[in-house]
Length: 227
Length: 219
Image 1: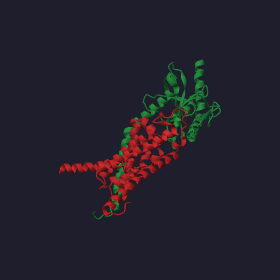
Image 2: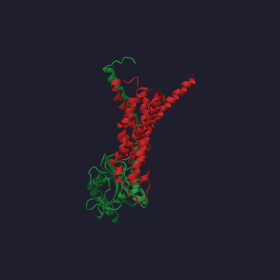
Image 3: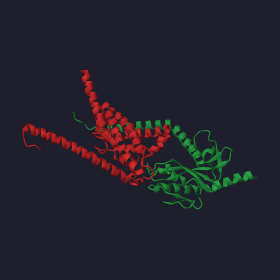
Image 4: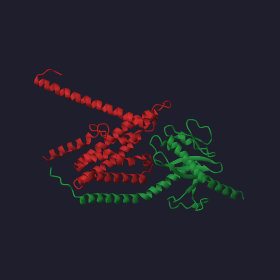
């Protein structure tokens, strides 16, 4: 009995973890956290670094908020979430500057941007404030991996086309004329738009397929005309 | 679900104050712990930049503080590890103890935030001999190329400062011209403006210092 409960709980945690990576991907499906997704993704490395910073802040703040969810009064919860998030972000900022100055220099303006990342506030409000600590941390890790993945997908394309490199290594040789627009802000919108289109297309197709299967099954049992 | 009663105003105020207080204490603690390390890193970055500008012959550097008369330089003892407050310049020294030139920190408004740079200046030849970006929050991938783009940096290896430095687009023809980075004109322009403004202040001071030194040697 006890092991069955454990298994169920594990399965539930696993579900919370996996959903953020693909099925409910924060950027491509939930369309959350677009400010950093557009602003910092002009190279793959930036995407990875931003993803790592978000991972840390999201996991810490989800942990703390889910722990305190019964103490925080509802009407002021958003302000308290923001204070918690901003504290973590500033602490990360100082710590990085002290411990890894080179990394801190290359991250530059991004770290402060995490405070206003609506992905973190969104998860705090929609999930961590209503669920237990374990589920919230699982959800936070999954969401940040999904977020990192999305930033890398956008950043990879933009760096490859806009600069002819990937992680600083030249891709197409010296004769490649980079599409500077891909590094500029419009390139972010173009790339994100293309990805959103793709994701929406596949989502619709799989839904149509499911619908058709359901219809066919119903038709079979009820003996009606096939679709 | 139980009936939710509105929490009292006192409770709201209390919880907001407590969260603000705790956040403040945590941040002060983190700041206190990390501050010495951050200061040391800053001094280290300046040191690295001086060596980068003046190359392998650099043996060390002296730190000079601008005197209260705003005209003369005073030597500063850097054994404490942290940089002094106030206007400083660094004199790069080669292995024979000869002064190779000065490294001057300068800062000004960039595209997003203050850009802090360090440039090498040779007062006898009236030339900038190198430029390093110490701190900037320019757009990653575009504006931050002022620190990383080899072509742009090459502009500053022997840049004449007379007449004032000019920003051009596409082709650099004069010895006082800097070719802007395409897509980062504002950041390139910011660097040129910072240099010109800083040079206005430092050129007479450094020229006088250099004249004093060579005069002392000849005597």
